[in-house]
Length: 330
Image (cartoon, rainbow, N blue to C red):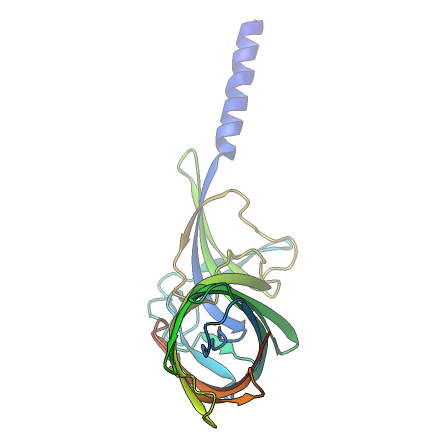
């Protein structure tokens, strides 16, 4: 009799455990994204001497007349004829569940769902250390503020340079890190399947407001004249850099849609991320002039032309940032 009771109890517990085994698939779609932060900028590294060792400190400022970059990024959910993601609402006491309205969302979203807010002024300080007659390392930090948000960034890299008869060339390669603030709405299509083949499908709405820091590469080539007896010398900087704007997992359920309790899928094991590309790529050109103040200090004036290459459907694709830089060499 005991064996029979144990078998019944074991079978009951096994069924209970199996019924609790749920596979959850969560498909993510971006609805609207706003990011706040500066365009990554690297100081201009001029070469007018191969004397070593030397250290150059370079405070710099840039100005942006264009305050926003906006457009469309891929990965939005399908929508109805009014370009709205349509759902039906179901109540169970104080709990609420949303399910996609059958047959309503049949169209691709064609509106704008991305805005990048660019600070008006970005300031930075760079330190360049020439360790030999052809090699230097550089370290820098930058700061900007956008809508009350303080945004810090910086860079670290190496430089290879040469100077001959008043003509100089320098190649810089490195990494730039930048903090970005974001405000993003995400839709998740959640499907739960239990061990016995039963399933339930519902919609979650996320609203994430947070900061993140991203690390991205850059490469720059700088040409400059180096005649100390000239009143004005010239420089030209060419470069390419990537800039990550969004890279996060949604975690904050939108309280406008879900009062307590939140239906968070705690057993999620599979995430299918359909959110589109949010990494910008910039080919940049900076022409300018500089002149000496004293024997070794310089003032640089130029304009940075950034040409965006990665985000297919945003505008403007060209951003111009006037800049000024001061070089103090020790």
